[in-house]
Image 1 (cartoon, rainbow over the protein chains, first blue to last red):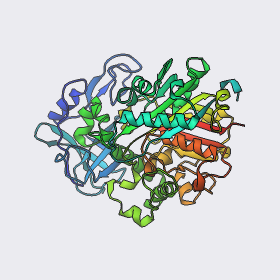
Image 2 (cartoon, each protein chain N blue to C red):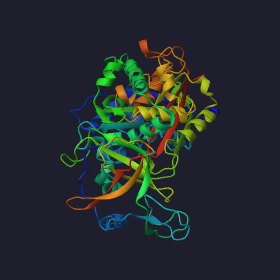
Image 3 (cartoon, chains in turn blue, yellow):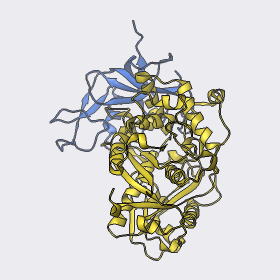
Length: 136
Length: 386
């Protein structure tokens, strides 16, 4: 339902790998090379093993955990058309992290809906977005 | 309860609450502090300890500035408690440590709000966080109403949550505010009024969201012994507990595994045990209500409602003045004002003093006050001096 925000992410820093991957049309998330736990949002080093995470490619499919349809934007004026739908998505085979992103397909969404991650080309960056997969 | 460890709240003060105040927030805090001193019957120069929450007061309204404006002679203790509402409501815990250990004898806690007049209002603070700027603002996961709305959506999925139930929370708070001098919103509401309120982030309408305003609230704490010599009946801090969910503020809203739990699970149990108070002894509950869902989640986590049934208290009328558990008897953040829980403490005190006129809970002796400041929480149990 509705728009996709166009607000450039602040680049550089420890989270930049997410946007580097998005430019390649991929999702990569940080994972401890020792305990293999995913950490999102990542601390600089694993809370258990004390080592920095390694970014690994993850599947582009998942399930909506929760969402809200936003009618009053708190973003800078002119950067999104309301209403827009922002969702928390659990990716297949990646226990723990929930990806926060916008739903691009226009139909109303429900918790439990299946989604695929696509990449929307914006002025300054490629933005991962969710397309709901119609139930059979 | 050991008498030696008890402290009491002896003075409370509030400014007028308005959308935008012509006064600087620092002046508002000083006004509220002076009102609290007047209420207690002490000279402000007697204050020698300060406790605030830690997210905005130390920078926005620093204790040294407040102390100077109040003519404080000795500032022996200054402490910053947890974040936002958790720090405001948990302040008596830090004050008790200072008083017990002899570092201070008269401790002021305050919160000053400039949300109405400052650019960005309550949304300016999270904008500075790295994960927000890098990951969340670009997808529009920004603005507290959205973050709590997604919780409400998940709650609806797991337990059910209807517009009628959300409205019952809003209407109950407003009903209390209608009999509360100083509350910002005092016109009673109907379900139709609720439905007419503009949608912000589904399922929240504007009426599900905290007010945004300027104003300040302050309260004073000292030993029980001293309290007995002062102007008002002492209100004892019988139990106070603070706890944090072991995650960052950003992660709390999207990543934590038990998405709908608050640290009220920990603080409620602990504060009640300290106070030696059972849940059925609570006469009035003042619970942090930045959004309707936050109030429901805390009531459940505190053990005051069954899981998934927080709204039943409101739809059944139990939260009214004559009900089994009057809740937010001043109107809360939804209808009274947004001073991040400080006025919840003040209302608990006023109820136990019997000062609330036609919104008085008859014979109130035990008040529970809870404050949320993600990822932190605090609960304080107040009692009359028996």
